[in-house]
Amino acid sequence: MDQIRIKAEPRTEQGTGAVRRLRKSGMIPGSVMKMKKGGTELIKLPAHDFMMAMRGHASKQLLVTLDMNGTEVPALMREMQNDVLAGTPIHVDFSEVSLTEKVRVTVPLYLVGEAVGVKLGGGVLEQTLRTIDVFCLPTDIAEKFEIDVTNLNVDETLFVRDLQLGDKQTIATRPEIPVAVVKAPEDAPATAEAAAGEKTPEVIKKGKEDAAAKKEAK
Image (cartoon, rainbow, N blue to C red; front, side):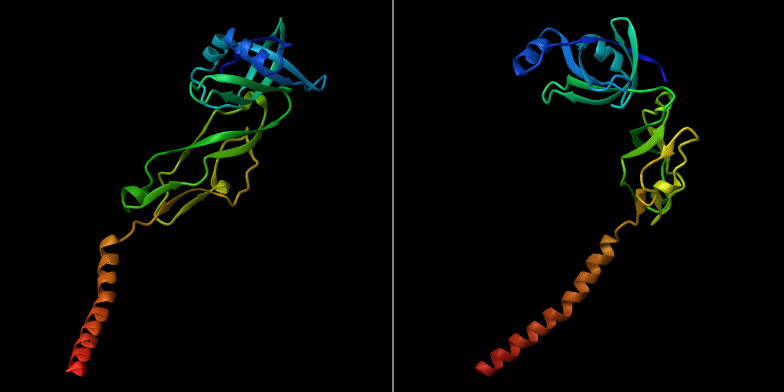
């Protein structure tokens, strides 16, 4: 993974008005949970530099190096809040980490390949789990896991216990949770015919009842 460096500096701005002015000046407010000293330190980041550093990175849980006035702090980006309309970051939270201690992170899952149950069996592939929790060293954090579903057949399910993510990651998500399934195709014409067949006796019966009623009326 490429090293991501982000300039940061302590901030004193707090409160809605002060933070709004901070954003207008081109800075993003944030915080760092300190591992060594304890507590949380308020920081601010140059918005342009931060967004350039994030280009090409899909995950929101990334290992970064915060340049705090010349002091390098390894940190895990835990949460990034975006403006609802503009989509730009408005707040970022980090946690200081040790590069020699494992952390728990949530990583997106992407399905790759065409399942044989879809290609040959006409089934429908459904992804039921989109992220997975793993333990790993901060330097081994993956931005995503690509899961090959080529061999998945109709009525077969891929579970968490079936995933092979490598020796550097230990899966924390429960093993019995399904990740993907190929469902059998619905037989719509047969269903329609069966439904029509079930209705036929009712129509005939109703017709006989109507005829009998007319005869009694006479």
